[in-house]
Each structure stands twice: as C-alpha cells, then as structure tokens.
Image (tube, rainbow, N blue to C red; front, side, top):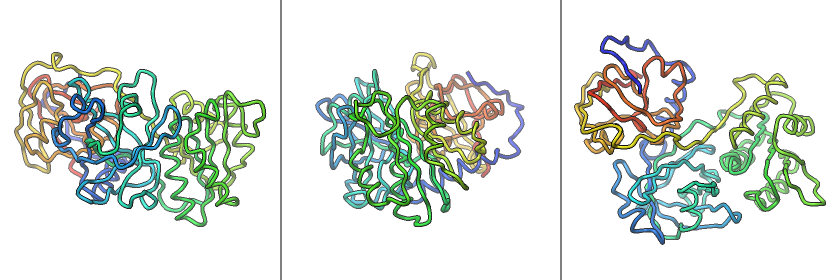
Length: 402
C-alpha cells in the first residue's frame, strides 16, 4: 500500500537519470506513433484469448505476418500494422503484449530482435518469445501463435539503447536476453562503421542458442569488427567455445579473452542471477557504473485482484495544471480507467517496466503490483505507476511538471 497525506510537498525536480528515462520514453513514443501499443491474442484459443483487438483502452492492433520457430522453445513473431503504418522503434526497445486468457488480461514485454531498418516486411517488427516454465503467455504464444492473429500491443518502451557512436560495445546476454542485444549488435555493425562489438552469449546447449545462423552470418560479414563468443554450460564433446555458466568467474575469463580495452559501453540482459554475476565481474574490472546498461524483465509476483480494491473510487489527475476527474473501477488500473475516460495521462509499456506513467500521489492511497521499476527514492517521495496501480480510496495524482 502506498499512502500520502494531503500536505505532501511537491517534487522539486526529477533525479537526472529518471528524468532522462522518462524523457526518452516520451520522445521514443513520438518517433512513430504516440506512446500507445497494446495487443491481444487469438489462435486455437482465439475466442477465449482475444475477442477483439480494440477491446482494450489505448490498444494498437497489430497482425501476425510470420511465425518462425527459432528453437524448440522459442518463436519469433513478425507483426505489422493492418493499416499499413510503420512500427517505429529503436534497437534495444521492447513492446508489451496484452494477452487475454481465461478472462484475464496478462501483459508481458518482448524485445524487438531486429533493428527497424532490417525488419521484413518494411515497417514491421520482429519479437522473439522464449518459453518460460510456468509462463502462461510465453507458452500460449509458442504453442498457438498463428499468421493472421491480431494482438494488442503497447510500445515501444525502454531506454536500453545506444546513444551516439561508442568506439566499443560489449554485449553480454544469457538465454532470451540476447534478443534486444541482437538488434543492438546488428544496428551498430551496419550503421556505426567505427564501432567494434564484443558479444558474449550464454546458453545451456547448442540447441538453445537463439539466432545461431544469424550469429554465424554476422561473424562472417564483420570479421574485424565483431568478436563473438558462445558460452555453454552443457557443451558437446568437441566444442571450441566457452564453457560454464555465465557467472562472475566465467564472465571475467571471457572478457580477458576478448580484451575489450578502451572506452567501452556495456549492455547486459538475461536471467537475474547471470546479470548480477556479470555486474560483479564488471565492477571488479573497475568499469564505471554509468557505462553499464541493463535490461531486466519480470512479471508481477504480487498481482492486485479486483476484490482487494473494492468498488469504484474517485481519482483526480492533475496534468499541466489542469484537473481531470475520473472513476477507477475495481477491475481496472488507474491507467485503464483514465484511457477509458479519455484522460490524457502519459504511459508506454503498461506493465510497470519503464516509468513513463509515473505520477505523484498527493492525497489518498493506492496499491501497486510488484516488482516494478520504481526506485526506493521515488517510492519515498510518493511516486506511483498508474499502469499497475489501483486506488483504494479517493486519490489526487499529479504528473511531473516536465
């Protein structure tokens, strides 16, 4: 429960990193379509999954144009806008799919695995989804996604992107964490001629390597600019790559082998234990915190049920000095209620992962799904996320002046 009293002080300004994150989210949303994106599902379960791609507030319906089986446990979906609009995004960004299963809308984030300029057909986006044990959405998409399905999609979201033209990019990914890194690598190698790329990829076995043929083609095309290392925890008998889990010791060994000297920027994505180990290895090497970028995806461990909230709750949203009155229904998040009532609140990912919908709780009380992207400092200052928040009593929410 997040609670703030009426006398709470207004924020004097955003933390620089948070301001940049939110600013990027807004600018990235404006690059193609305004911040929306949200998608529903349909297939064998079509009727139960997604009766209408326009049934969710703020939804942008995208159509599945191609389904490619990458590994036994991973599939790539190419999505197009049925109206012919270009789906704009930056390498490293993700999209949120909203899948309706058994009457419940589940939202999951999946990264684009190709840069926008390489997507085929032109104007499309390729999302890659790896099956997760117990993951309802990933299993549903792996088993049932079909050409012609309409999905509700939010995005693009995220600031896990390359700024400028760094001389060296070191990409460290585990499992499906290579998805945004593949888009980043392909973009850098094609667009930034003076940038070298070191790419360390961790998996269990050869059969688990996503985009194996694409990796081989990239290495052959850029022999002097791309250093590629596959690390397997269960390698075959004759294996010329790295061995072991991508833990702190293995990461240090692989970085020593690749010798990424000079002004490097590091991008890390994968399972949480792997990311923690990589961060420790980088710190031990003296890498500055500001040069390490991470992308962490997680589904809410605690989800707020409608019964936990009660009935309809009045909410006042203050946006650029203007006050909007809305009603937060028990089965909706504050964001969903605002969109339904056409209140122009900011948002992007819709699942607590980007911070674009952050507002300050000036009065009242809300519950939030956990985990989410709010920092401890933001929480202490009274910030909430409307996309995963529900009002438990009358609230006043104020958007950042910026």
